[in-house]
Image (tube, rainbow, N blue to C red; front, side, top):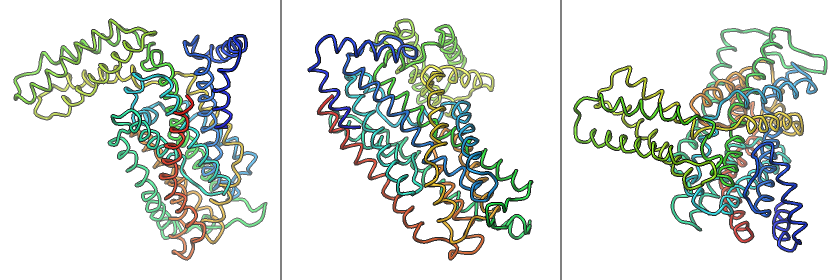
Length: 496
C-alpha cells in the first residue's frame, strides 16, 4: 500500500492535463457530500483520499483486533454463539462511538503540534498523518495475524510520538506534547494493573461469599450452556464492554479523522464554524463581565486577570475577522479561543481569587461554550468511524478470541471468570472515557482474565507461554510503533 501511494503520487506528474483533470473531478465528487469543494491540488487531493481510507482501515482493524476481547468471554462460556455475539458486539460498538462524545478524541489530537501544522504546507500534515496511520495498521495486523492481544491504543500513541519526533527533526519546535503523552501513558500503564487487581478481588469475593456451584462451572461440549440468569449476566457484561470500547477506542479513530481534516483543510475544520458568532461573543462578554466584578487581589493574581482580559479582547477581534476560507485568520481565531479557555481555567483554580459561586458557574459555562469551537467532530465523521468499527468487529475476530478464551489460563474460562473480567473492563473503560483518557481494552480485559485466573487457582493457573508472548508484544508495541512512524515520515517526506 505504501509503494502504491508513492507511485501514484509521483506518477501524477507524468499524466496529461485531461487525466489530471478527470482524477481531480472524480475525487471531488467522492468527497463533495462531506467536505464540499476543496482547493487542494490533484496530488494532495489523492493523498487526502488515501488518508481517509487509511483511517477507516485503522478503525476497521481495531474492530476485529480489539473488540474480539469483548466477545471472547460470552463465546467461550457458551452464553452466545459467535453468529449472534459478533453482530451484537458490533452494534454496541457502533452506538458507543456515536454516543460517546469527543473528549478522548480531542485528547489524542493534543499529542501532535496542531498549531504548527496549520502554519506549514499541507504536505507536512500529509506526511504526519500517513506515517501515524500506516505504522498503526502494520503493527495491528501483524499482532492480529499471530493471535496476540495487543493494544491499538499503545500502537497509535507510539506512532503519534514517532511522527512527532520526526516532525521536530525536520521543522524544530515541539513535535510531541510530552505533558499529554505522560498523562495518557499513565492511564495506559495503570489500567491493566487496576484490571488485574480488581478482577482478582472480585473473583475472591464471588468465590468466598457467593459460593455458587453454577457460577464456577466450566462449560463442556457444544450444548453445555449457562443457566438463564448467568447467561443474562454474561451477555450484559459483553454489551457494556462493547459499548464502552466504542466510546473510548472509537474516539481515537474520530481524533485521527479530525487530524486529517485539520491537516489538509485547516481553514474549514480547525474550528467549528457551525457555532454561531453570537454564542461565542456572549461567552466572551460573560467572562469579561465576571472579571470586572472581582475584588482586590495580589499582584500575581492581577497579572492573571490582566492576561485573561487581554485574551478576551484578542478573541473578540479574531472572531470578527474569522473566515472559513482563510487559514491565517482561522488559526488566529482558534489560538485566541484556546488562550481564553486556558487563562479562564487558571483563574477558576486560583484559590486566592475570590469568586462568587454564581460567577464561577458563569465562567465554567463560558468555557464549555468556547470548547465547542475547538473540540468537535462533525456527525458524519462519527458515523463513518462508528460504521468502520462496527463492521470490523464482525470480521477476523477468531484469532484473538481463541487466545483470550483458551490460552491465557491453563483451563477453560468458567462463568465467574468471564463475568468478573468483563465487569472490571467495562467499569475501567467507562471511567476512563468519563475522564477523557484513552485506555487499552485489550490490556484491561486480558489483565482482568489473568487476575480472575490467579484468584481461582493461583499462579499455576496461568499459561506462562501465552503470557510471555502477550508481555513481549506489550513491551515492543511502543518502541516499534515509534520507529515505524518515524521512518515512514522520513520516507513520505521525500515524495510529498
